[in-house]
Image 1: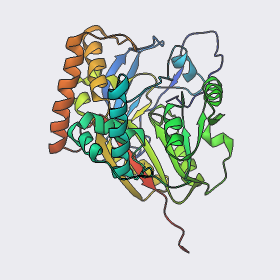
Image 2 (image 1 turned 135 degrees about the vertical axis):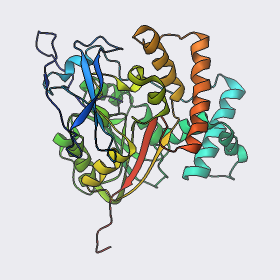
Image 3 (image 1 turned 30 degrees about the horizontal axis):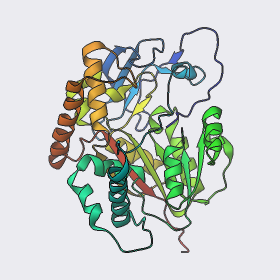
Length: 360
């Protein structure tokens, strides 16, 4: 994931200017103070940042107030590494690697229709025994059923890892990233990627079967404009799949102001299920499947634990074994909690569909 902000030189001063933002972006209700005077816990961006929560209980959006101005937000990303080349697990070598690949392929075949020639295998059933692995596999295809020769656009494709995976599964996959360096790196890997902002590149209307966004919308100053543009370029019955942190997650309830996904000042809006659904409806989407998931909950718990203890978390650092065990244990707790309350997963995952034309 690469955030939707230009990667260019900024002014010589290190200050990030901000503007008052007292009201909810979605419903217009005034916000109540949630957390105050938070520092950047990851990359050392300047400033102290406060968060508000919408007083409308049927909304629940959380946002920065004051909010960084768009002209200065690039300063929050000067040392921000957004191009992790993530993989599902660490399968090792030889037989173990082949076996795990077979489980993945079988699961995606049964669940999402990513089949290959030959008989179906029972191996995919093993993924159902490991909820964390299953959550990663669902995410790896952005919860999308396969469409033969389907045209897919990933907005904020970063390193291109997911884009390449979707292309390998048979999608006609294209990407866009606001960082020209990221786009160039993707092109070197043979991927069809353009640099820029979706709203500026003037894609044709009713063109794509699928648009995907992973951990992008929370970084955007005007998320409604972005969603409206996604709706415009989708074909009738086309699908938008997006993933974003969940403000009502178990992790946030446990860790409060130390929650990993608050990420001030980069996360401008943090959504609840209700607020994200309302925003999608404003953008024109009517039919949607929305869920919360435990995908990468272990990492969020490890990061939150570090922030709670030291005020910081260093990406890429090897965490103590006790921290890793804590993350796994808390993921199991969250999985059980999710059976009782479907709003507590660390991430919100939505697949929203554009309506068919009336003449169809």
